[in-house]
Image (cartoon, rainbow, N blue to C red; front, side, top):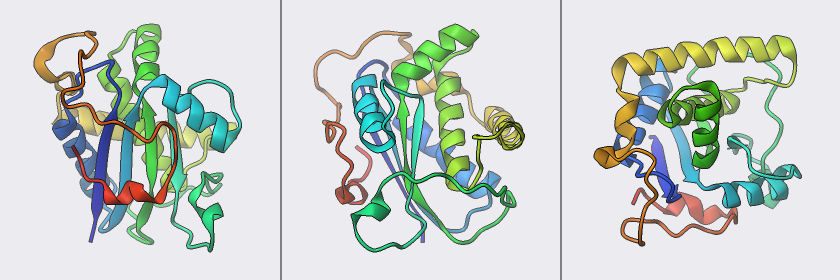
Length: 204
C-alpha cells in the first residue's frame, strides 16, 4: 500500500498541486518501479526552509531541497530527523524496502535558480522533487564521483518526466510570477516544525 501526501505552504506562485502530485506518482511508480512507498512532499517558502535548514542541518539560510529519510525503524524521536544519505548507489528498479520519508522543496529557491540558469521555476521544482527522491533511494552527492552518478540519473528522470508532462502547467491559472493574494486555498503550515502529524494530513 502506498501513500503520497502533498502540501503547499507558499504564496509566491499559484501551484497546480494536482499536476505536481501526478508527476510525483509517475516518478515513483513508473520510472523508479516502486511498489510501495510513504512519501510526504512539502512545497514551502524561503523562511520556513531556512528554519528547517538551521534546525536539522545546522546550516544558515534557505536551500533548495531537504529530504528526511524514515526508512530505518529506530526508537525515539532521533529517527525522525534528517540523516546522511547512504553512500551506495542502488539499482534504479529496486522495489524494497519501501521508500519512506519527506521532502521539503523551497519554491523561492526554484524561482531564483531558474533566473540564474535561464530555465523555468516549474522545471526547477520538478528537478528538486527528483533530487529529493533520489536521496531517499540512497544516492549521494557529497563526493564528486557519486555526485556525477546522481546527476546523470536526475537528468534521465527529468527528461522522462518532461516527455510525459508539460511543466509549464504547474503554474495554475497561467499567471506568470504573480504572488498570491489573500488566504483562499492557502494551507497554513507548521511554521518550520517537523512533527509526526504530517502523515495525518492529506492534500488540500
